Length: 261
Ligand code: GLP
Image (cartoon, rainbow, N blue to C red; front, side):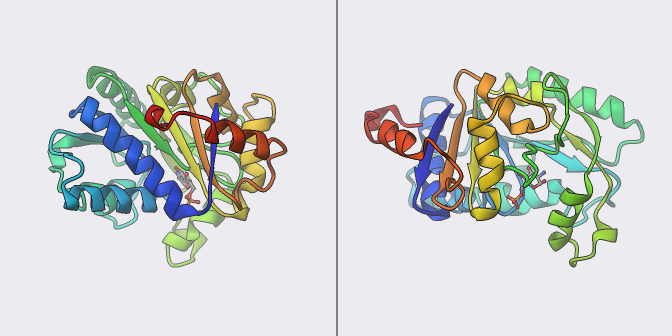
C-alpha cells in the first residue's frame, strides 16, 4: 500500500479531495464510497470548496454509504444516512437520488445487507472508497476478527467502539446502538481505490499495525495490504508509530506529481 504522510488533517483532506476531483474529471459519474466519523470531514470540506469555486463538477457523481447503525429511528440525526446527507450530499449540492446506503431499519436485516451488496455491484462498483479507522483497527464497522472475505452484514459493536462513538450520542453510551450494518472487508476490497485517512495520535497504534503488521483479521484494516491500489494518508501524529516513516516520505517525495494518489 502507498503511505502518504501529511503535516495535518487539513492537508490530508485537501490531498484526498484532489484525488476525488481528478477521478471525477476522468469519470464524471464515479461512485464515491464515503465514511462517517470526524476524520473524513476535512475531505468533504475541501471538496465542497472545490465545487463552490468551480474547480470540480460533481453534478453526475454518486455517493454510497460504508456502514449504518441498526435500529435508530428514521431521520435520527446520528444515523449514518443523516450524517452523509448533512456532511456530503447537501454541501456538494447532490440530489438524494444519487446517494445509496443500506437500510438499517429493515425488518429483514440480512436481506437488506444482501440487497446492498447487489446494489453496489449493479451500480458498477465503488470507484474510490474513503475510510477512517477505529482505534481497534476497524474499517467500516468490521470489528477485530471480522472475516477478511466478509460481505455486507450485521455486526455487533465492541465496547471500545461504543465508547468511542458515545460522543455523537450526548456522551451517553447507552444511546449507542449495539448492532450495525457494514460493508464487509471483502466488499471494501472490491472498491477500485480504497483510501484510508487517519489523523491524531490516538490512531498511531492502529495505523502501525495496519501498515507494518501482518495481515490479520484482528486488525481488519490490515486487509488493505491485499489490495493492489490502496492508499493510507496519515498526519504526523498518526504516523508516529511507523518504523518506515522516512522511507514512506522519501517514496512519496520522489513520485511524479501527475500520478496523484
Ligand atoms: C466509526 C465508523 C468508521 C470510522 C470510525 C472512526 O466506527 N464506522 O467508519 O472510521 O468510526 O471515526 P473517527 O474518524 O471519528 O475517529
